[in-house]
Each structure stands twice: as structure tokens, then as C-alpha cells.
Image (tube, rainbow, N blue to C red; front, side, top):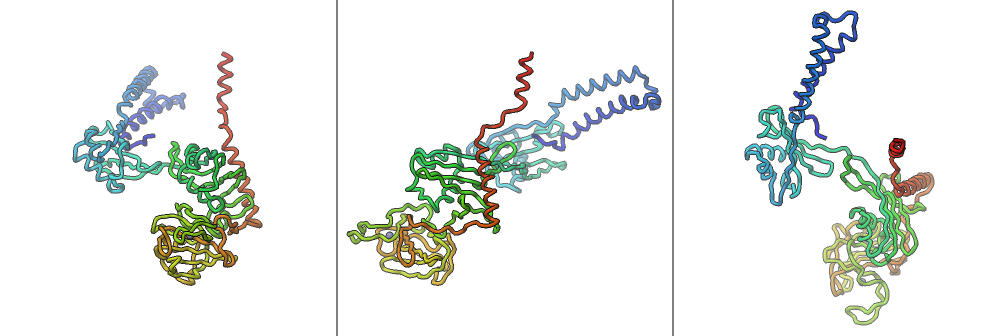
Length: 453
Ligand SMILES: [Zn+2]
């Protein structure tokens, strides 16, 4: 809706004054019939009736003219290669006037960020003497739910401000079956890319998305988003609940805020999804050689491969798979730049062939899961850049892909009780979101009425 801009005020004042006039002259005598006010008594009933009719006519004339007196808004659209000045000049503004408007926009927003197809609204106020030459307002959207408005002040200068639309949180569910890829199935269900990435991340401790997913596997997601009153998306919020059924076995994860403030994901039993160790310590890498017997690419004979190789470009950051302490940092002829980290419960992880070490990596250095400890490279005995990653349990290499890592957190006591009630609330909300929308209650009575006629 258009706001009541100050230039329209005179119109409302005149209508208001007329109405007030009728009120005083018509209703004042009625409220005191025995003792009419002296000036009204002298008017006489006949003249009073004529005045009433006259005023009614005046009002209807004014209301007929009102649309022409109301501010009028024109929309102009940015074409490819247009600047804001180009659009304003095309809309009929002089170069000087356009420059004044653009300068005001510039005070809070760079108009170069505008794009082709964007709509600019110009509002003219017919009550202003310079109406045609100078718009009273220029406005355009800078982001969903956020508009920039430049308004003419009483002194003729333009002033820019940002208007933030009121927003609210809505919850949406997406349910799909994987027929080709998870990406395609998610897109089909309008699951935003951001939400899909969060979904993959929360299940990646337990599922190898490149190898485990099969046709017919299913997913469920319930997530928040912030929208404006007219339904525009402002931002995507977090996933409240998600389920992934791999090979007929469903895994359900729930968002839960424990006392320390951060939201984490937990399975139905209240076990934290975040594991003590990551299975894949590089983002976006592909597993190029798994743990097990293989023909060695350089030596040419079969040998036990005691780690996982991840192919990734030189310089790709390598993360610490878990919290721990750097216990070995060296340059070896076989492993190249090499780091080994000691974790809890007898576990350790090792990283080889790095192009360089992360900042501050030295023996005894404490690291947190996800810290960058080095970068993918091709140092040591290799045929190409990759990360050779080992997981050791009690000093023995184990298969990082299949080893069962312990969960880092388990909710118990009152925390678990709170989790359990939030979990069932999420389950109920998810079911409810899947039910058909409630039927309009007014509709049946209207139908009955029509049938009676
Ligand atoms: Zn290897």
C-alpha cells in the first residue's frame, strides 16, 4: 500500500474540514433540540436543509475529483546496460533532476548494484506545482522485503531511506524419493540449494553420499524461512527435522539447542550427529582410491592401501578430522608433507602429500575439528595431487569409510527429557504440514444460502 505522503495532506484536510462542517451544522442542533444554538436558530430549517444538500454535492464533487488529485505512480524498468540516470531520463526527467535523485540514492546505496529487469517506481503528486518535472518519490527493491525510497522534502531536496518490511517465520516441508540424483529429487521438491547443502552436511557423518545412495531412497525435510507479508523470501532458516531412508533404513535427525546455545542435530535417541571424527576431511573431494588391496600405481605390484585417497586440486584446504593434538609433523620421501593428529579413545588420523602445512601447525599444537591443518598437494611418492588420509585405532590403520566412529555427545537426564518433548512436537508439526489445507468455513454457509434461493 502507498503511504500517505505529506503532499496529499491538503486533500485530506479539505475533505476532513467539509465533514466536520456538516457534523457541526447538522448534528449540533439535533443534540439540543429545545435550545438551538443562536447562530443556527437564525438560519432556519429550510436554509439548513439547502446547506446540507449543497455540502453533500460539494463532497461528491470532491470525491469524484479525488482520484485525479491522488498521487500517481509510474513504473519504469531497467534495460540491459541501463544506469539509473538512463531510466530516469527515459521517464522524462531532465538531466539535472535525474542527477539529484541519483545522488540521493547514492547516499545509502550504490545504484550500480541495480540489474536489468528491475522496476523503479516514480510517484508524482498532482497537488505539487512542479508535479510533472519532479517526482515526489522514487522507490525500488534492494533486497526481498527491503525497499529504498527517496522522498522529496518540503525544501525540494531529496532524501533517501531504507524501508524494511515486517517479516515472519514460516515452516515448510519437503518429501521426495531419489529417482536419479539427490540433487534432482531435491530440486523437484523445491528444496533450496542452501537447505540441501545443510541436509547433506548433517547426514555426512553417517552417510557417504557418493556411494550409499540408491534409487528409491527417500528424504524428508522440515525447515524454516523468513518471509515478508506478501510472501517474498527474505532468508532461509535452519532445518528443524530431516530424515533420510537409505536401503530401507530411516535415519531421523532433529535440531536441538543444548544449554551452550548452538543448534546441533541429534538422532531419535538423543545422540549427537557430530562424530568424534570426520570421514572426509576435504570438502568437494572425490574418493579416488579406497582402503584395501590394490595394484600400486608407481610400484606396479599389489600392496595394501592403508588409507583413503581423495582427489582434489592443489591448495584445497584439509581439515582436522576431529579435536586433538598434532603429534607428528614431518617431510617424508614417501608421504611428503605429513601430519598426524592424536584424538581421544585411542584414535589418530594422518594426512599425507600436502602442498604445505596450515598456519601454526607444529608438534603439540591443539586443533579443533574442522581447523585447516594443511592443503592438498603432490609431495612425496605420488602420481598426482591428492590427500592420503589414514585413521588409526590403537596404532593400526582402519578403514575410514566403514569404521564406526563414536558419537561426540549423548543427551541425558533433564536435557534428554526436553529433547524428547521437542522431538515429538517436531514430528507432529511435520505430519500437520503434510495435511491438506483447512477448508474455508465461510464457503458452506454461502452455498446453503444460494441453494435456498
Ligand atoms: Zn593413499
